[in-house]
Image (cartoon, rainbow, N blue to C red; front, side, top):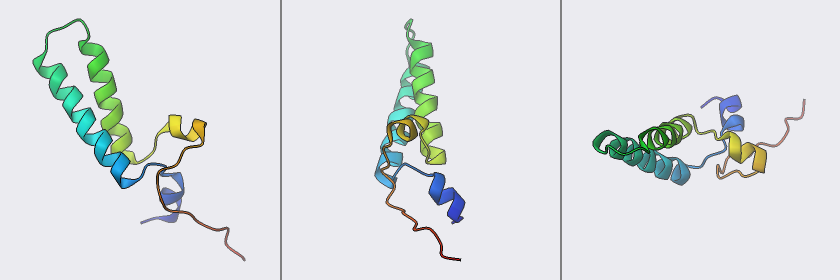
Length: 77
């Protein structure tokens, strides 16, 4: 995996899997339901699946949270 990609990732594997299943569940619920909340469920579902796929959450970055275990020390050149 590319080092730059690992630096940008801030979601760990457990966080990504949970977001994926919750997001897919919300999208499925949106598909079968016919309530006034359909757009909200779809937006949260797509957001969860997208952040899970890329491994990056901008809200985590702003809050300083990182569940990804990869850490890099500055290289000595």
